[in-house]
Length: 265
Picture 1 (spheres, one colour):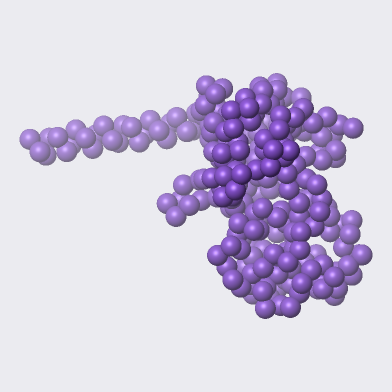
Picture 2: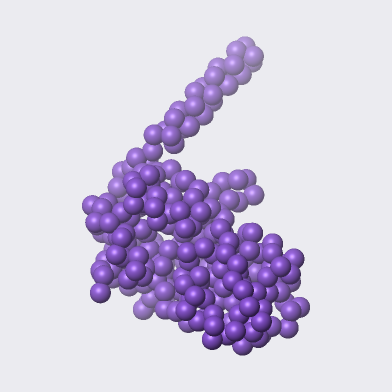
């Protein structure tokens, strides 16, 4: 009897597992993300995809009455992926810019950010003024990449090396193959908090805002934008901020304040 019960439970479990896989493969919404972008979307110790934007998208999908599947795509590949229709939307702390608005659409922002410089704690580098003649790393196609392209000469940088995500850049920084890494400050503050050998030494003010990205003029963008308005009014996104960053967001930030959908200026 126990064996029969075991076989029955195993069979049911197997059916449920297969159903779950089938459901994932046939998800209503496919979301592209650069998995490994802490704390926005990354894999935890159990290899489960988690993060601020994972929780946000899951709630948006729930309110749309749709299932969702995340697809791991390098940051620079997210743009052609939404434009081609391979994915329905993209997240990865994507900054809204006028240049990007020429070819894609964003919902209203939900996070305010800047860039930052991270170095090895023992390097003696205290900010961008100490990067003259040094090698800096950036993520390909990111706003950090754009900032270095515009301001790198001002700081006499010797070389810019491009990476497809945080992890490979951090490996090179720790190994001394690059001298500094410029990227979004929330991700780096989260990453280095338990790594005393690394240090965020400068906040580079860029006034960025993050949002969910869609193909140009996609109707889904307006639907999601309306849900973001609901979530802000209910305090859901502010609670996500507390969960992932350990602090309440300021009332004036886009995490709390309802804003218009961005338009090209």
